[in-house]
Length: 138
Image (cartoon, rainbow, N blue to C red; front, top):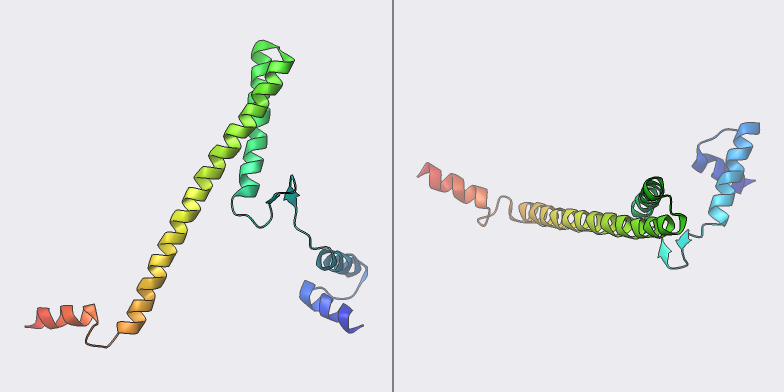
Protein backbone atom coordinates (compact mmCIF):
# COMPACT_ATOMS: atom_id res chain seq x y z
CA UNK A 1 0.00 0.00 0.00
CA UNK A 2 2.79 2.56 0.60
CA UNK A 3 3.84 2.21 -3.04
CA UNK A 4 0.34 3.07 -4.22
CA UNK A 5 0.12 6.13 -1.98
CA UNK A 6 3.57 7.24 -3.18
CA UNK A 7 2.51 6.84 -6.82
CA UNK A 8 -0.70 8.75 -6.11
CA UNK A 9 1.32 11.55 -4.56
CA UNK A 10 3.69 11.64 -7.56
CA UNK A 11 0.81 11.61 -10.03
CA UNK A 12 -1.08 14.23 -7.98
CA UNK A 13 -4.35 12.32 -7.78
CA UNK A 14 -6.70 11.37 -5.00
CA UNK A 15 -8.61 8.11 -4.55
CA UNK A 16 -11.52 7.15 -6.83
CA UNK A 17 -12.26 5.27 -10.05
CA UNK A 18 -10.74 7.95 -12.29
CA UNK A 19 -7.63 8.09 -10.19
CA UNK A 20 -7.19 4.33 -10.48
CA UNK A 21 -6.74 4.64 -14.24
CA UNK A 22 -4.25 7.48 -13.77
CA UNK A 23 -2.47 5.37 -11.16
CA UNK A 24 -2.35 2.43 -13.59
CA UNK A 25 -0.85 4.66 -16.29
CA UNK A 26 1.76 5.98 -13.84
CA UNK A 27 2.69 2.44 -12.83
CA UNK A 28 2.79 1.31 -16.45
CA UNK A 29 4.97 4.25 -17.47
CA UNK A 30 7.43 3.71 -14.61
CA UNK A 31 7.63 -0.05 -15.20
CA UNK A 32 8.07 0.15 -18.99
CA UNK A 33 10.21 3.23 -19.50
CA UNK A 34 12.04 2.08 -22.62
CA UNK A 35 12.57 4.97 -25.03
CA UNK A 36 11.12 4.97 -28.53
CA UNK A 37 13.88 4.25 -31.04
CA UNK A 38 13.47 4.89 -34.73
CA UNK A 39 14.94 2.02 -36.78
CA UNK A 40 16.57 0.81 -33.56
CA UNK A 41 19.17 3.57 -33.79
CA UNK A 42 17.81 7.06 -33.12
CA UNK A 43 16.34 7.64 -29.65
CA UNK A 44 13.59 10.06 -30.68
CA UNK A 45 12.50 10.81 -27.12
CA UNK A 46 15.88 11.93 -25.77
CA UNK A 47 17.65 13.31 -28.85
CA UNK A 48 17.14 17.04 -29.33
CA UNK A 49 15.48 17.97 -32.64
CA UNK A 50 14.79 14.35 -33.67
CA UNK A 51 11.03 14.39 -33.07
CA UNK A 52 10.43 17.68 -34.88
CA UNK A 53 12.54 16.74 -37.88
CA UNK A 54 10.83 13.37 -38.28
CA UNK A 55 7.39 15.00 -38.06
CA UNK A 56 8.26 17.75 -40.53
CA UNK A 57 9.87 15.17 -42.82
CA UNK A 58 6.68 13.10 -42.79
CA UNK A 59 4.63 16.15 -43.66
CA UNK A 60 7.09 17.08 -46.41
CA UNK A 61 6.87 13.55 -47.79
CA UNK A 62 3.09 13.68 -47.99
CA UNK A 63 3.05 17.14 -49.55
CA UNK A 64 5.71 16.44 -52.17
CA UNK A 65 4.42 12.98 -53.07
CA UNK A 66 0.80 14.05 -53.29
CA UNK A 67 1.68 17.25 -55.14
CA UNK A 68 3.74 15.32 -57.69
CA UNK A 69 0.95 12.79 -58.12
CA UNK A 70 -1.66 15.52 -58.69
CA UNK A 71 0.54 17.12 -61.33
CA UNK A 72 1.78 14.01 -63.19
CA UNK A 73 -0.52 11.10 -62.17
CA UNK A 74 2.49 8.78 -62.07
CA UNK A 75 2.25 6.62 -58.95
CA UNK A 76 5.74 5.11 -58.77
CA UNK A 77 7.53 8.38 -59.51
CA UNK A 78 5.32 10.17 -56.95
CA UNK A 79 6.35 7.66 -54.28
CA UNK A 80 10.00 8.24 -55.17
CA UNK A 81 9.50 11.99 -54.96
CA UNK A 82 7.75 11.53 -51.60
CA UNK A 83 10.71 9.55 -50.22
CA UNK A 84 13.09 12.18 -51.55
CA UNK A 85 10.97 14.90 -49.97
CA UNK A 86 11.07 13.07 -46.65
CA UNK A 87 14.85 12.81 -46.75
CA UNK A 88 15.41 16.42 -47.81
CA UNK A 89 12.95 17.96 -45.36
CA UNK A 90 14.10 15.77 -42.46
CA UNK A 91 17.78 16.57 -43.04
CA UNK A 92 17.04 20.26 -43.58
CA UNK A 93 15.05 20.52 -40.35
CA UNK A 94 17.63 18.42 -38.50
CA UNK A 95 20.60 20.59 -39.48
CA UNK A 96 18.71 23.84 -38.90
CA UNK A 97 17.53 22.75 -35.46
CA UNK A 98 20.92 21.34 -34.42
CA UNK A 99 22.65 24.55 -35.55
CA UNK A 100 20.27 26.67 -33.45
CA UNK A 101 20.66 24.24 -30.54
CA UNK A 102 24.46 24.50 -30.67
CA UNK A 103 24.30 28.29 -30.96
CA UNK A 104 22.01 28.45 -27.93
CA UNK A 105 24.35 26.20 -25.91
CA UNK A 106 27.31 28.44 -26.76
CA UNK A 107 25.36 31.53 -25.68
CA UNK A 108 24.34 29.80 -22.45
CA UNK A 109 27.97 28.84 -21.77
CA UNK A 110 29.16 32.42 -22.34
CA UNK A 111 26.43 33.77 -20.06
CA UNK A 112 27.26 31.17 -17.40
CA UNK A 113 30.95 32.09 -17.51
CA UNK A 114 30.07 35.80 -17.32
CA UNK A 115 27.89 35.24 -14.27
CA UNK A 116 30.61 33.12 -12.67
CA UNK A 117 33.20 35.85 -13.28
CA UNK A 118 30.82 38.51 -11.97
CA UNK A 119 30.34 36.56 -8.75
CA UNK A 120 34.05 35.79 -8.50
CA UNK A 121 35.38 39.31 -9.09
CA UNK A 122 32.63 41.37 -7.46
CA UNK A 123 33.94 43.80 -4.81
CA UNK A 124 37.59 42.96 -5.49
CA UNK A 125 40.34 45.07 -7.03
CA UNK A 126 39.90 43.02 -10.26
CA UNK A 127 36.23 44.05 -10.67
CA UNK A 128 35.89 45.84 -14.07
CA UNK A 129 32.94 47.94 -12.84
CA UNK A 130 34.94 49.12 -9.86
CA UNK A 131 37.84 50.12 -12.13
CA UNK A 132 35.44 52.07 -14.37
CA UNK A 133 33.99 53.95 -11.37
CA UNK A 134 37.50 54.82 -10.14
CA UNK A 135 38.52 56.12 -13.59
CA UNK A 136 35.36 58.23 -13.91
CA UNK A 137 35.70 59.81 -10.44
CA UNK A 138 39.29 60.99 -11.00
